[in-house]
Structures are given as structure tokens and as C-alpha cells.
Length: 197
Image 1 (cartoon, rainbow, N blue to C red):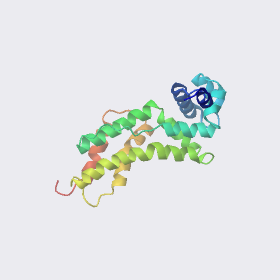
Image 2: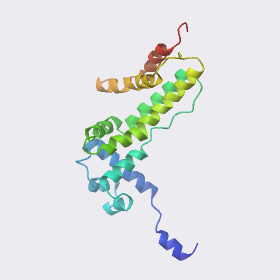
Image 3: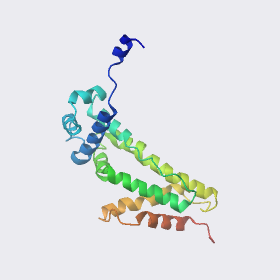
Image 4: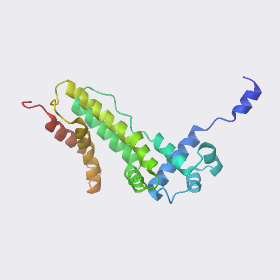
């Protein structure tokens, strides 16, 4: 590779700066809301210049959708083959991720902005909600194939029933209650069990 090629490529982007900018954008979205946050605030929080942000993302919406795209709640623990243990592990990982990224405030902001900036909620759904639901559905499908779940069970409703207690407990002021995942899994599996098992 010649000098001309090296120069034309420019300096490589810093992964650390990218991560700092995306994290600052998510935190400001959660704390200030979309309309009240600015790229100047993101730059200050990430300790970069505003031009550094503009080199990477053209607009606030572009930055926020990139930040939401980077927020992937799809890191499931390895499957053990035990339905109860696998469902509980996925729910525990989900709760830890939501807490780590101030996810409830982020969800609230995306819902509040739905009329003005619908792509925020759409991307949150695509990048975080649906992949997590798919992980739970995969475990339920496996259990269904093994005869642990009755044939007529609505597995999408079961996925909603597994995730629902987390949100309900948060709204009731019981966020972080110990054992919520195990309780949710036990209730759902009891309802899905074939007759006579």
C-alpha cells in the first residue's frame, strides 16, 4: 500500500470515541428526552468536539438511531437444554441489561417521542425488543418440540407473559425484586404444561 493510499484513507476512527459518543447519546436521551438533548451536550458528555460527532453522524436522529442500533440486548447465556433454567437466565440477563443502560427511561422517551420521531421506537423495537423475544421463543419452541408444552399453546403470548412481570413490577415500585424471573417462568410453564404432566 503506497503513501497516497494511506493518506486518502484518512485516520481510522477511534472505537473508544464512538463508544463514548453512543453511550452519552443514550444517557442524554434517557435523562433529557429527544427534543431537549443536543449534539453539543453529547459532545460535552463524551468529551469530544461537536465536529467529531458530525464526522460520524449527520443529524441528531442519525446519531440516536445509531446509538439504539448499538444497544443490542441479544447476548443470551449459553443454552443448557433445561427449559426453566434457560428462560430464567434470559430474563435475568434482560433485567441486568435494562438496568445497565437505564432502559426504562429510554423506553419511556422512545414512547413519548413516537409521534414526532417514530424511527426511535421502531429501532428500539427492532434492535432490542424483538431479538430478546426471539431468544425466549427459541427456548419455548424447543420445549414444545420435546413435548414439555401442550400442542395448542400460544407461544407468542407466553413470551409476553414472561416479560410482562418485569414491566409491571417496575410500574408498581417493585423493580429489582428478587426471584421475579423464576416466579414468572414457573407461572408460565405451569400454564403451558400438557394435561397430566
